[in-house]
Image (tube, rainbow, N blue to C red; front, side, top):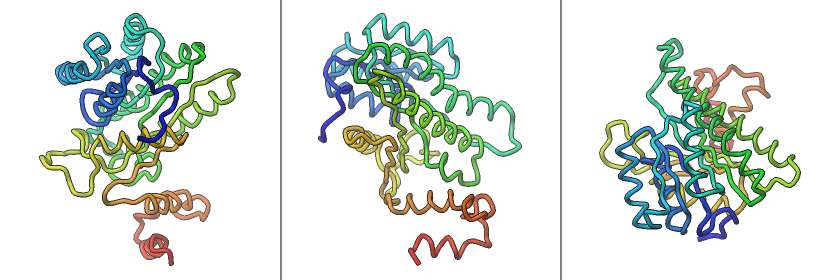
Length: 283
């Protein structure tokens, strides 16, 4: 494995939300496998309990805390912070990973929009604002990893609430890193995890077998650790069907809508289909 940041070390403390399954669970296992004390949080109490039992086999029961938590509720995240600090002390890695994707429509139910924004964006704001001050004051090298999405950058049609929430995560994490690097004596850095196509309960959508184009959560976490070691802020993950070069072209086209004064989401506009194809093919 590549060199890891100083924050990721035996006996250090990692907190991972959305850790009952998927990327969060894979990250928690990776941290535990490296000898870290791990606190995991999720709304799925049964899944969280099972995850905690697996982690205990890696790092010992005394080094695992499984706390059912709804990250959309600020008081619940505050309670998580109190449990973690009482049990383990200072936190060195905070991975705000909890997210939902139930599907949305522009004029769909208000409750769906509110819940998606409250979990995907509000949960990251809550986690950061509650945990980060102590991490900064502690003076130790520390990481805050927020899970975003390519959909928060290219914002494809079809799931507007999710796109808005993840676009907010990108903007928030960029502002967070700017704030941290401008804080005297601060040894905390923020990072935006941008997964590719990953086979998880969130993306399975009824499929029982991993699609050929998808990465596993473990592959995603391995890539994340490698890029954290390299100091990347934008951890842009490829997968088995989308190489980085294609992601870059899609993202460049998206920002080009503004620069070139094209219609929004012109990638999906019939009048720009040929131009986008030529852009991707490098013509």
